[in-house]
Image 1 (cartoon, rainbow, N blue to C red):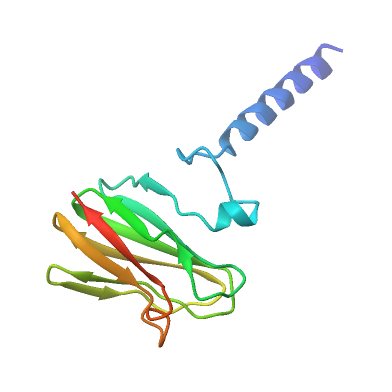
Image 2: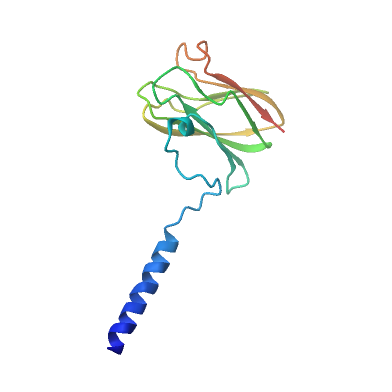
Length: 143
């Protein structure tokens, strides 16, 4: 009987440790987006490498739009994650103050663009033909 009790106690302890290891370590606190409203907004969080991590989300329905129209970051290394769940191709390009860098063009996925930025104002936009002219453009303020 004692052996069964100890075995159950060890099994329970192992289960608790395993469950604790599977938690979400994202400091954003929100976890994954589960509603259309949540997927259409951008988040801003600090990355572990001392730089800034920003998220830009294309319209999941395939419209030529994304959110948000304005971003801000601290000077230094800035990573913009583009989330595009639609079959419409999108990319992100950052331009200004001597910087011009573009991500890969994606459909139904995510890509990242990392740039080193000095304080100032930059423009980010979708370089796919006609998308910038259709409003896929925003301002990135770096302080």
